[in-house]
Each structure stands twice: as structure tokens, then as C-alpha cells.
Length: 260
Image 1 (spheres, rainbow, N blue to C red):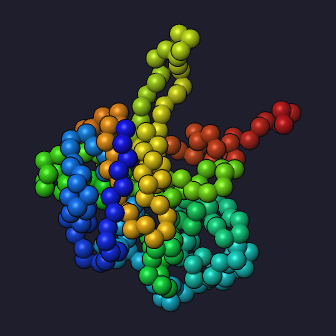
Image 2: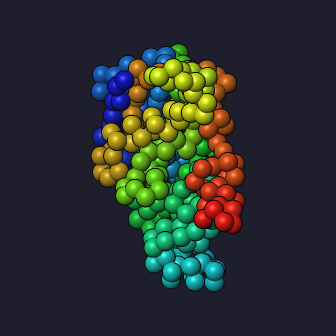
């Protein structure tokens, strides 16, 4: 498998044609897009071309946001923006509020001042999967290539320092590899294991995109064992909280009395 970073010469701006910029950058890099490839796009690229920025000076923090801001050592405006954007808040530590947004557990509802114009927060698209579908169809229209598309942002793994890549939007590829019913190396039947391919590829892309001034909002993944089809999206990797091994264990799935 190849994970090819696709960089730009200058930052994207509101009104830019994202697919055109991607295809031009591929051409400049001597990279050809083919059916079966996976196109990884940083959510910040979507924020840039669509102007998905929250102006902090326009945010009016509530008393709740002001109180929480003191505890987490964030600005009240940032905290209010997180509370407004999040579908659910799960808890907080210094400099981070853990939230659920668009089916993804994310710090600060995916809002980020990094690589956003001064005084603003970059936001995810309202419907990341729909955005991924639109991009996929536009790539297909212009190149005739049937590709998978993943929108990538940085996320966290519990008890690990640093970020990994998360697929916050998926289109055109099966995001799971189902190992149930297959044999393991000792011939035993696998009963539970599903591989989250979408987030695995997002992390691979994240590793070559970087998080700073690399100006690399795209990656082209070739040779991944993905199933490309029009019917696939992100639905199959989303779980209700009570079935999530981490969130469910910390909320509804605590040990019964006498087993702790």
C-alpha cells in the first residue's frame, strides 16, 4: 500500500474549488488517480474553501460557559462555541471538552484554532458524510475514477499522548473488514473481530499530512484492500454508546455490585 502526500503551494481560501485544487496538485506531483484509490482530505481543507469558521468575537458566552471556561482554562467564547456545536458533552479536562459530534467522539466538538485565521475556529461540515459524497462524485465526474473518499481530522486514543487520524466522513468504500466466520492462524473461528479500515486509513493519511505548516491537506492511498461501491458510507462503523466498549463501559456498563 502507498500513502502519497499531496501538497499545495499556498493555503486554500474561501471560494476555491477543492476538487480542482486536489487534481492540480496530483498533476503537479506526477500522481495519477485510478479506480480503487482512496482520497483522504483534511477537514481543514473543507473549512477553508467553504469558509466554515466561527468568529470568536461574535460569540456571546453564557454563564455556564464562563464557569466551565475557568475550570478548563479555555476562553469563554471557545467554550461556548464548543457547547453550541456539540451533539453531546461527555466530560472535560484542562484545555479540552470531550464531546460527541456527527457520530464521532472528539475534543472540543472538532473546533480548532490551529491552521485557522486568527480569531477564528475551524469547524467540520454539518454533514461530513454528505460532503465526502459530493467530493467523490465530483472526482468521478472529472476523472471517471471510482474512488473512496475519507475526510480526516485528528483524534485521540484513550491513555495515549498525541493525535491519530479519524475518518469523520466516508464515501464510496466499505469502511469495515468483517473477519467473523474466518479462521485465525490456529484454525479457530473468529467470532467478534471487525477491522475499522476507514479510521486505519485516516491515520495513515494523517501521518503524511502532518499537523503544522506542511500545506498537505490531501493524501492519495493506493493499493489498500478496500471495496469500492456507490452504496457504502460511514453508517456501518457507527455504534450506539451502550455498545461502545469505551463509552459504554464508562457509563451504562459499569461492573455490577460485588464484582468491582
